[in-house]
Length: 455
Image (cartoon, rainbow, N blue to C red):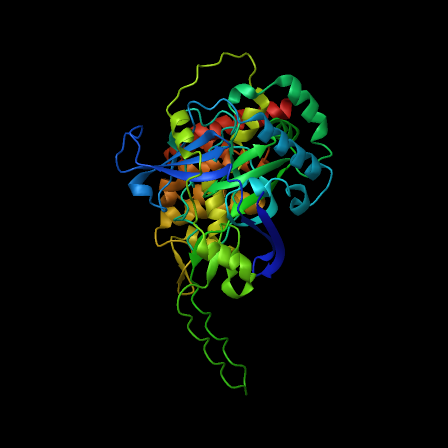
């Protein structure tokens, strides 16, 4: 049994629970399978997320495993479900969490099953989708590129922290059972925690426990709050902040000394300076490896090459769940939200006027089209009313016609807005060719709004 140590520390991102695993069983984790013949691209590297002796998720990493490139993701073709003892252990931990125990206490028996290393453990809300509007359970049967799976996101950048919020299943879609969902429909109403996830890459985590509950939460409109296990591996270096300008009569502040080497280590959600790490945890990171092959690696490879028989089932995810997922925030929206600290009304007006700079600084990007798209995504997630006003103003300006079709699609996802209905109705009735690009979204919105109003 591994040696587990935990400690809460205070960082710039708030309080964080660190969990150190030494001599862990290593039966839940990730490993590299290298360049394997299954990849059509010889320059791609395969990584596996495994549970016990079963490879669960396969990530194909292009450009020799570049950390800046999105991955091709799929459930492993031979995966039929993990070992029952492992499932029972996850169920026991999950039951503790649902009874109100903290992640530190509730996941205590799960930590020894992890690979050696230091983990950040916290709770966060997740969207049960693939980041593209599809319900996550069943979205990864075929290997395909998934946006925002790169470890170093080009939109968010390396300086900011962010919380992963999309899911990959650890159970095959054939495991969905409507009778089980009937039980979780009632259970999710009182649960403090709805799932357990293990961060995999970028904005995505693997759901270890809580698949049926995710169906129920989406159907009932409940937040899907999960206990998150996130490995800390990435070194980072922060430039020193410039000294604050002196007040009248004060001596100027001396510049901060330039640190040589790295500032600390990070995961997606937290950056921890070296001086804040407990010594034994820091040594665990420095002396360990970010990822290593488990003892049963050859077994994983053998199972990776098997293909399961296609299962035929009449059990399907409810249609209303799938429709609700289509209206949830997607990966592009979350990237924009994480990349922007805020946008003032004056900055938005500058964008609408065709300026990408405000008061001498680039607001989002030197590219106007990209800036407006990013601003739309940010506003839609953070402030619906400002998004509606911005979208209407942008679609009213012929000089921004390159953005109209995209903005109209975004706006049409906002249900029952009288402002949007009036704008789309006036645009459709005008017959103006300037609104040709938004006509499809406008007609659909008008029909939906009038149908809802008649009901």
